[in-house]
Length: 376
Ligand SMILES: [Zn+2]
Ligand SMILES: [Zn+2]
Image (tube, rainbow, N blue to C red):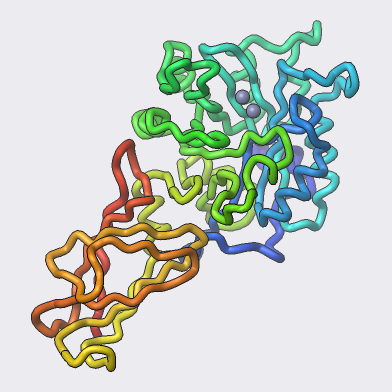
């Protein structure tokens, strides 16, 4: 009950992400919802260049379900011009603006320290002003991370591979990181930040049961950084595999590592999560052996269908050969291709093993799946 009241106090009217006008980026299985999220965004209230309502409009244009404006606690370069001492203002302006829109804004902030420990986002906080002491100085790192956890925040490590803080671009743990992980104060890690992807950060996530995150960390207009003439060049998004579209369920899913990241053409996440995505978004339809194109009756016609907004880059790794193709296929977003498989004998069912080359489940490792097709 106490927990429930806590939530109500944080989210007041914003407990459910509205579902009207929701865009399906990836088909989800019955009873699951893939909530699209960008949980690392800046405005003029820290070092960004735009007003919070512009972030809301951008997210609506990108059909995003959930955002958080995560202003730096320790860095406010425009404070001479925007001297509002209330660190909750950015959230309040955005959240006040989104009422009845198909989008939710959750309250967040960026704890901004030198490396180690680096930068950390705390989202689902209820008061950013509590990250300052009585002299209005930002809390030191360990106190700040504790305060975030006291507020029930989901805490993730931002850009652990940022070249300004790690000159070699390699994400690695310092003793302070081990400490906050062992205390369960850290729950997630960015493997994708803006235009960068860190396989080392991914390994840290897998080794320490941290949630895999990808964010825009946008400071200027989103279109300047991401939506240029290349259609596939979208902002990085984290998809949260939620039981329903409430904030509570979405938050629980984040803590339970139920995410995957869409970055350029890559889908990045834990194996069980990516299996769920590919099962729903890659389907194969059999047209049997009896069709017009070849005078055979022994060659199987198949349709490979991609239901998602990302391309599918797949390699067939089974025993048969194709009649018109090699073993590599790219299926463009929301489209399909026809292939012809020489199964030698006429079969009732066929098992087709594939590697999904652009689905990443670990450093240097892509997802493997087995499709069972009934020939009909
Ligand atoms: Zn940062
Ligand atoms: Zn940032």
